[in-house]
Image 1 (cartoon, rainbow, N blue to C red):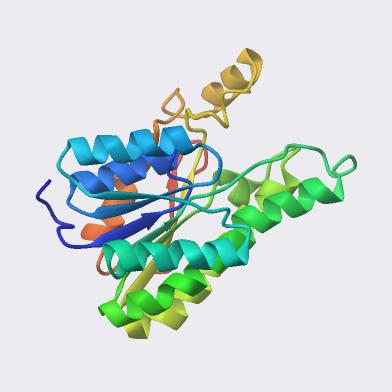
Image 2 (spheres, rainbow, N blue to C red):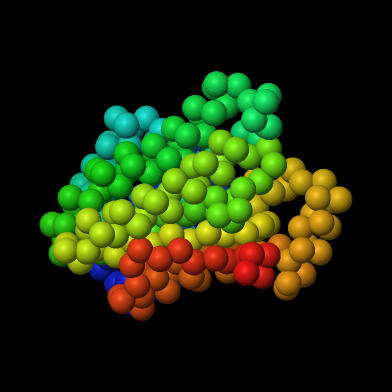
Length: 248
């Protein structure tokens, strides 16, 4: 696996499946050693690592619930200790608990806030010192079209994804002096486990509203992330939509 990212270490949170998996594999194909984080899907995370190793790359599987500050800190520490200084951080770990505002429980609200928003802060705040010491790097945060436009029954999820855009823009201002670029990627409707629960009617409505007439693929998000951390040297504080023309 020789490529643009040879000798660099990337930590991808929530890398056991879906978009996170695709990102981990894409960065590995370009030479990065990958910290493959997972919370519950151990077998799937090990499959991702095995695929990376089979292709000649290097991967470390690390279990951590990013919503727990102690576990987030331990995750970063282990990746740095066993792989080396982190140059690329992809904050992908996330969850959803769909419910309308009037029916949402406090637990459903807190769970999504803690994972999607607080988890991004916990991991980033621990990783950034390693990146500074390494001489710079890239942070990519996965937002969502729901954070830009909202969505019925997704007030907890949409709130976190909107807040992450503010996180990215502020972090970009603070970290530019350390040669750390910070950007957000906001996918539209992508074929993953999270969207597999949609009914055929819901899928049709989304496809009808999407200019390209289909759901996206995780690999299509991953390719943009790869570009940002390899060739996107003059890009920071930006939000990139990957939604097939659902939002113009």
